[in-house]
Image (cartoon, rainbow, N blue to C red; front, side):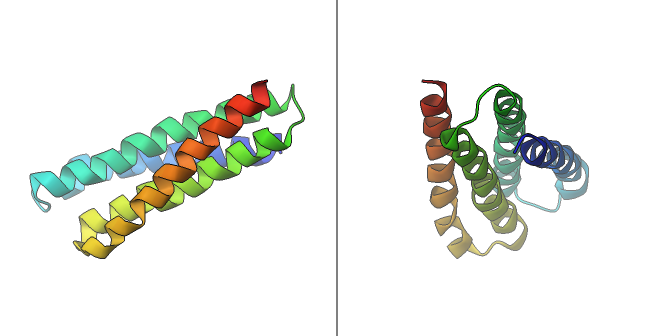
Length: 120
């Protein structure tokens, strides 16, 4: 479990930095300011949760908990659903993709709740 979440956190951080640079340099002027903000929100939450995955990996070396594993998987789901839907919405303009974003947000919230439960 520790290696899985270390890898997921590292890859999420790598992609987050790459997407952040792409948004700042490749999309500025191509997207409206509102859609650029949407894209940047996806990057910001991806980076927060990349760090959270690294914390889960670190804690998994000390704790053996189903709550901890659930937390990591929920953070991964949140990155894919929340950040992924915002990226797609910003780049394509397909507004129906915004309906997926709250599901990713709930996954993030559930991940944080599971992390708290793992620490009890």
